[in-house]
Length: 115
Image (cartoon, rainbow, N blue to C red; front, side):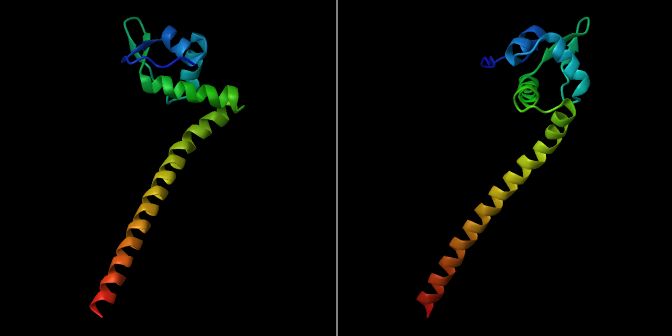
């Protein structure tokens, strides 16, 4: 898929090209996935943000490459933030444990030096 240009808004035709799906598919997915919320202006023209493009690409991958149904893709999108949050928490916990181990080693050295 093409790189996402550094601009704020994308028309439905631009989003279609960037995401590799037809405009009617984007309109349909808007109905099926509440997370897709393009800004609507003058005469209900849709304008997508970069975040929308990334989300649509993720939905496309879930449906076309990973073989999920729309319902399954919806479920994956709901679970994904929880998984990402768990991964971040796990990384923080590992860092804290490593820091505590260093502190413990320093305390043991200090205790040995005092005795």
